[in-house]
Image (cartoon, rainbow, N blue to C red; front, side):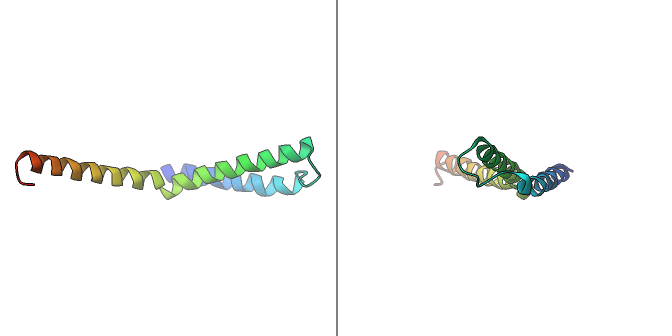
Length: 85
């Protein structure tokens, strides 16, 4: 169920981006409208990236790898203490 929340958020963010991009005034020089549009698009892309990060489980893979490394270090330390390593 955790992934469903992020999938819904991702879909909403993509829909919002697809709806708003044609309506934003971008490319009209260095004006307030252009700056607003650029910042708005950057925030939308940041939200999409954060949801993809959670859906793909990058953090979970990293945490599991760190657990494995710590377990191996603990094992090696125990072996040194016992005189086997």
